[in-house]
Length: 183
Image 1 (cartoon, rainbow, N blue to C red):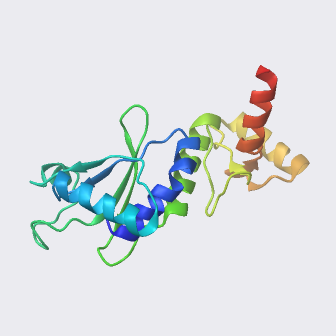
Image 2 (tube, helix red, strand yellow):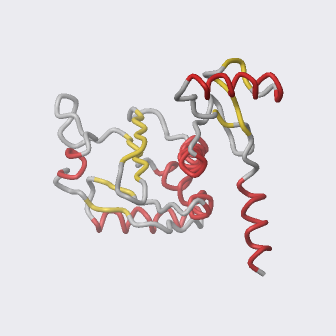
């Protein structure tokens, strides 16, 4: 990872934690090299990196995940991001070229979109952010299709039987409500 990216991830770590997500770095450098790098970042910026960075000196892990292309280099990894769920399933992969830094807000948005889609059994539309309407699953039968058309006409919440939307509330509002209900 580039230094600016490790700093950005470190600064965003609390946002990932709020989404019940843990960050892990992987680098083909040695553990000693990582320690020196992290200490240098701290000395120059005051930022402490709160997540582990795995030393993958021989590149075995990086190669297994397709992060190193032997046609390009035997040691330089592309900047990949893997979003892996709590069942160990890779849900999304971002692949950035060496000269383009990662976009932390988009990674956070994707984690939140995956969690929201799973929780409500819906899909997220293009450019979705928390609080925006979600795409309702398509009807599976003709009677469900007719019911959906009626709902759209009544609620004005879609453009056709195959594309309708629903609001499920803002996750932050739900979290506050859940906390107050527990008191």
